[in-house]
Image (cartoon, rainbow, N blue to C red):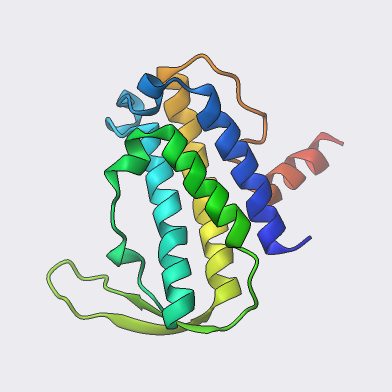
Length: 166
């Protein structure tokens, strides 16, 4: 299995869950998520992948420069189309990248770290699963839809649980 295939599998789950929500549920604040919405979490996932795509072209990735597109968090059809676009283009050759990040809210100084495309894809996959766990909690607040047992759970955790059950 390739990392791209793993992301594609996760995106299928995420897209299916979005598809089951009503438009109102997708953009309804979740009290458990400090009034964040499912759509806001989906937007965050998508925008990191968009920044990785931009960084692949330029050679420099900076996730902090994401657009924060309100349409992604309020229009589930548009969000699903964005996920499909990422799904269709994620499979690329590895290459060296620079990761820019600023960790001091009082300074514009950026750290520059050597990375590569595959490492950033892995980061985005882990980040997606983490946000899907939050989405799962939010969905429980705003909807009665049923999600698969492994939704928002890391594959290593699923494997561990299976091994413990035997």
